[in-house]
Length: 105
Length: 315
Image 1 (cartoon, chains in turn cyan, yellow):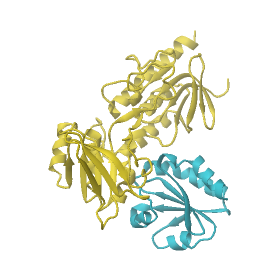
Image 2 (cartoon, chains in turn purple, blue):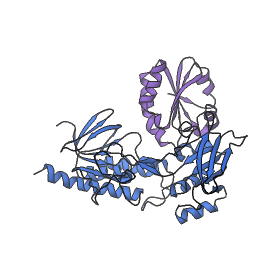
Image 3 (tube, rainbow over the protein chains, first blue to last red):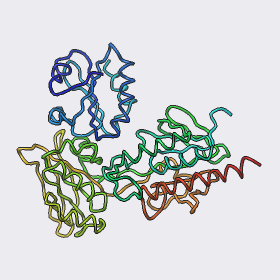
Image 4 (cartoon, chains in turn yellow, green):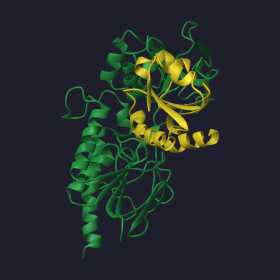
């Protein structure tokens, strides 16, 4: 998975063609850490079809808020740089993330 | 029979992990099932000051990490699966998850409880958009912003104080005119200069276009409605409801006895009315729901499970 920071978010996500998944997480978010291995598995499964990225919001809070993310875990799906769908909190489960991808792939 | 466990534990919070530890240590083939994260509610709690014997600065995650380590060191298996169906009446119990089916001589239900929603318009739509039930998950977002905590019990006030480390100001909104939280917690809260209080008030509605922008409160004594808008320079604020819990007893309540609130009834040995089915931790009807009582329940359930298996299967 591509590790996002303030400096590369625009290039890797907003200026990126095709489908991009961004996993928003933080050091203090235990549900995020529990979910991460499953997102990594999806990244492998969809390799070459969907770009998977993760953003630790602890050092990029304003960036996350600019994407209308104010709760974790949140997974956003972008297409050609535009946010098209998301799952958050209790809905942020591997099965729902996969369903979201399948809908747009 | 393949895949037959002595003990299947549903839930990997402190009760489930303690049951797993005791059960595996007693050489029973033990499986702990958890739907998302190990640890249950306690991993969303930053400070655990009252768990006897814990090291200084114990946090929910650090305590749980150690419990997981201990349970696994004695041979308990853990699997991530969401349980969708249980058949517990027969001698061999069948627990069906989204991923697999598990069979067991004993089932210990340790599914715990989850935060209660306010049940007001806007709450669900704005969850993750300024409404949060997990301070440790989301506190970062509210650095230098304002936050409203709804509720007046121990959890509400403790989480409010945790949030003062991030937020500019934390206002507790409580439906009564005094806090229900323990005296030691109350005193700390009243001495915290970042904390404010709104009494006798309940939430009527949460509003916002994709992000929380307005909180509508009603004073229960006067009926007066107050609308709180996000400060213009911030554009938003946080709302953290901590107004109690609801038991996760949905799968069991049709054939196990519950109290009015939906909590499972057990005897002092953690036995439910169905032989071979035990309950432990916050899911039980009891007077104190803490880590210390959850682990005690788990230990008792595991020891009783061993006795039950000896008496039922091995003579």
